[in-house]
Image (cartoon, rainbow over all chains, first blue to last red; front, top):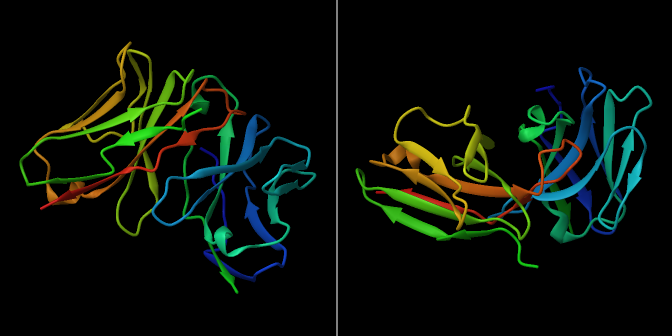
Length: 113
Length: 115
């Protein structure tokens, strides 16, 4: 599985935007970029994913670099409920190799009131 | 539409006993994944199953652990002769397919404590 690199931790203030970076310099052409988050004592929760183009949904935006070697998850207005570990994961589009998500260490996001 | 249901939420077992963890996937999902999260560590893939078939068990310990996903009923992760090192949170996820552009839906886990 292609590897991703994320900062161990980040802090933000409530109501401010948060930009969570992820480097994936060895990404292959068939890898999707997925973001999940895990709130305390809960299972991981899907946030957003994309292949080449930037993506928006009700939770967040995903900005993908033109060379696809990095991406940024954007939370437009952080709330206290956004405090979680955020995981950036590459998942191959192939039928069998796409069978799993390989979680790294993720970024622990702290949101200050 | 109910999400992925895992039970029990908490399970306490003495060393040497068996632990059975259940996972009911989302309706219409025939792909199930099990992950383990040791205290203060990340999520580790264990096994991936489709109905009645184990597709990828590369993350499963070779002994004492087994998984099944029968034609009817929930997926079961079975740990025989538990040891203290098995204490962890076990998460199940499901998806309608294994396509890399698809998403996984996770349950809230079973927290196993071995005394």
